[in-house]
Image (cartoon, rainbow, N blue to C red; front, side, top):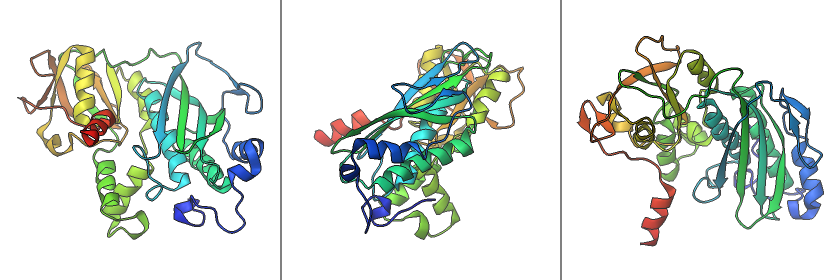
Length: 326
């Protein structure tokens, strides 16, 4: 993993040119040459817009942002980490629709004193995430602007490859609730980071793994299309926590979800970007999915834990911001 000199790769070292020094054209040239190409590329970076193939005739589109402060901190994340996470969180949303990620567009707003090397390491992180999580996917262009607050935004595109999209609204009573991916590690990693631990100096493998999953999540991207092929009736990306996201799926489908009590201590665990899906009872669960509950007819509470109502909790940046201002 790239990790340049000073402040976790963010500060300019001896001989490092900054974005402000090389200007917009030089910074874009340095960034673009590090980016991976999509399998669906027809025309890549260099024009006013890219052109990609849409073999299915339909395009799945999503967008997510990472803003310095609420979403990442330079003392925790390297530029490589930021690039990886930016790609991963967007790829996961495409996978949650049962689609195959095909391309990413990235827009960065950076301070003028950011080293060009850090910009390139963001690109390296995106390239590494695509190679590991969605090998057909690449970065096909975007925008670079200046801002006092480092902001990274990506738009992801996907192909349904002949499948129907898997939405949040298809769960039915009698379905099995299942999970693909890890749950709870990213939240543990964030607690460790705030406690002063870092990945390289964490006390044991479990702590290093948790911090790594917070900085560089590894959502089960391929499992999204597999779930669609297996007949998933509903699915979403677990980004804000099992409790709050499960309640969202329940509300969209007009059902109640009853979770296994074994997950009581992970209801508020956010940022793992696992996939939560429902399958008909007659379906064969794909190997990546673990049954964690059942779908019931709509009751007073959208979410139960072992049959008992439970309050949905999780990550809500607007609520947290309001609490800090109060």
